[in-house]
Image 1 (tube, rainbow, N blue to C red):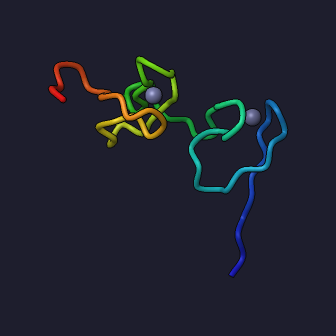
Image 2: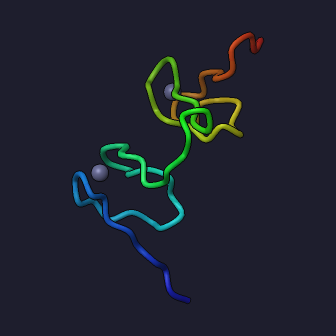
Length: 67
Ligand SMILES: [Zn+2]
Ligand SMILES: [Zn+2]
């Protein structure tokens, strides 16, 4: 099984192909619309829109969401 890699155009870090942004500098790889990414209000990590909570700090991402 071949694990494909992609390299960040910004910092050159090696990332797995299916990651949506560079793990090091958070440079987005995919041309997601801004509405597809929920940036964490606490740590600014760009989370997938499907996420309810930041995958880094677990802050709730969606406005009006009650924890
Ligand atoms: Zn990078
Ligand atoms: Zn966060």
